[in-house]
Image (cartoon, rainbow, N blue to C red):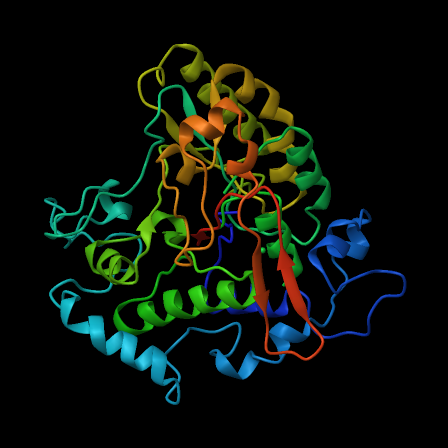
Length: 373
């Protein structure tokens, strides 16, 4: 939850590591496990900073927070990984600036999404971006810019609806509740690699699994960045429709704009536009407004679409992570809700390099992606 976990490295480092910077533990609040974190219902308590040893003990293994990422000189694994793929990354595609300059060719040679919403790469060997759910009358359901520290009420709502979608302990709840977590970048070449590489390592450290999907920030991607992501085993997940819920400024985009976008999308679905092939709607877990809108419009979406599923499930992606001891049901199994043992997936246990912290993640699950937005 595209994942949101959706994130930016630099800022992404801060989101995962410093969403809860070191403070004295709050009395009577369990911040030692995903289950304890999920039980907190007061948003102020949820967002109280705390120290999570498995993360803070590893801070020196990552680039500094709140800044651009680059490969750490002493990180032999990252250096080896970059050296193994660098020769395959095109050098003829320049780093982009926004807005697109007038000098950029109208033929869009780099398949630059920001220029012309290109999602079918022009560089040989790259797969198309995922922009829609392949199954009919299906909505690829997920939320970028999460996990929001105050999201327990939102996740409780999704859980009450048996609804799965695409954040230290908040991220573990996303996995345990069955949401799909996806990593993103606006950097280029070696630094773009570092953004994605360290995002993948952070998610592995915090949640225990390594993602295989990502979403570019603001959709800004070209064939050079796709090449880096592809070499890292990351599938590029985009969208067809945007609620603009994260762009409210009170001027050009208002709360009413977002509601109009939801309603227009719902009307399009009612007209049968997705009867043969599903779609993906861009929504966010950014703040109370975006989560409240998702809750408000959920009944209508559920009523119109036959299936609301994580994007990976809609693609029949039963192996959502690098780790092979974690799997998903097929779309048919998920949609039928006759999941039985298929959805009671193999317990995923991640023991961190901490004498006092062993994290166990169990139960009904669907995948995490790096959703960078």
